[in-house]
Amino acid sequence: MNLALSSALLGLIWFAITNLTATLLACLLVRATASRQLSAGGLLALRLMPATLSTLFVATLFLPAHILFEPAESEESLGLTLGAVAALAVLLLLRSLFRVASVLRADFELFALMRRVARPHGTAFEVRGLAGVSLAGIVRPRILIGSSALAALTPAELEVAISHEHAHRRSLDNVKRFAICCAPDVLGLLPIARRLERRWEAETECQADAWAVGGDTSRAVALASALVKVARLPRAAAIQPSPSWSNFHVPALLEMRVRRLIDGPSHVPRRHTAWWGAIVLAVAALPAAAWAFDLPYAIHVATETLVTHLP
Amino acid sequence: MFKSFRSSWLGSARDPLRAALGRLERAVMDTVWAGGDFAVKDVQAALGRPVAYTTVMTTLDRLFKKGLVRRRREGRAFVYTAALERHEIEASMTAGLLDGVLANGPGAARPFLSNLVDVVGDSHDELLDELERLVRDKRETIRREREAKRDRPKGEPA
Image 1: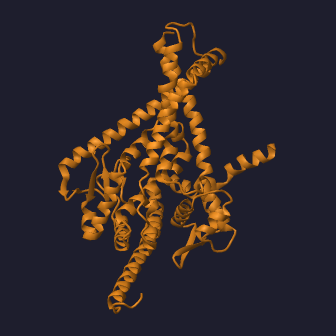
Image 2 (image 1 turned 90 degrees about the vertical axis):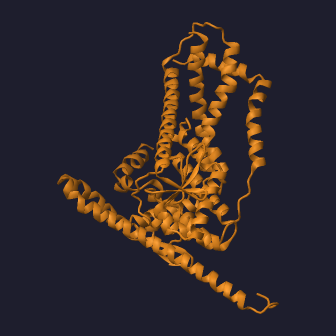
Image 3 (image 1 turned 45 degrees about the horizontal axis):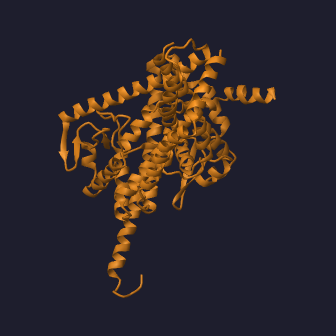
């Protein structure tokens, strides 16, 4: 087996192994934090942890170590067990690629359709055939308002609904939705991921509500009223939102959001930019630390042991 | 050990509720079937495992929409009670109603499905009416507060 082939196959195997391990860890963390109020960022980090860690492990530790320590040609061959593990990784990556292609295609088709039927309305676009209000698109998200919603909402309600979508845009929520939808991980195959995603969505919507309201009681009531009005609009619309869109009306969260807004506007959440910076730095520093402690050679030895001993 | 394994797996597989309700929904229904009135936080406390408040609230709302629990307002919150006893739900499910209806052709299923849609639609409208009323009440409160503030002579404490 030459170096390129062995790098690809063993990279897939390590991707699957670290993905499974990180999924197990994420499941334990989800259970441990089930009764706690985690921030949207924390929930997102948990959801994307397996895909991020496994990709990072393979790209920064396994592959450089394998290229460095493995001879150009070797007599090694993979057994059935490792073949199955590699197949799992291939399936995960194919599923992810398929989802990326589906979401991107849906977004392109909708934008093409939008160019024909959308009319500018301030910072947003009016779209006939769309139910409610949505933030559409991943790279350049735009706020879309269905004609029926435009007719149903008062100017104050419409303004606060648009502010809600602006908050989603500022937080890059559509990019996060896209990452969640397309993350290549075992966690995404488990029901626990759906629960985690629902918790993340609830936090994200409440955060966007808080941003839109800005601590003002009248705006909170206007937003609650807009939510109820949009919920009453007929659902059978000609344009169906893509999975990467942020939708103003989320049926499962309607009651909770309206009650929260009526009970009093929550404080505008603080942005934890410093925390995120620290986390990104820590994650980036991990491979450097691993190389400093000669961990890549240990990984190479572990790879050799797996290939030699597993059937 | 084998017996408990068998009863927990085979037994639950025979449980007709397992086919219709999720695990948390069944746990919430078990709590509500114990009898009495339950606020969301009571159900959360009775579950015996850590579940977020909003998750319990969403689950109860889903069960309400399915017609399995009733609710009434007490202050700002809803209080839930079981709408049907366990054996009543099981009886209706095990009757294989849907199977029977579908066996008579797709046309025969139409009245059943349209009735189901009506029931779900009614409970949805009921919730929206309730939320709309909350919004109206809050608007009225804000209006009264503003008027009171405007009418109050300057310098008088609130």
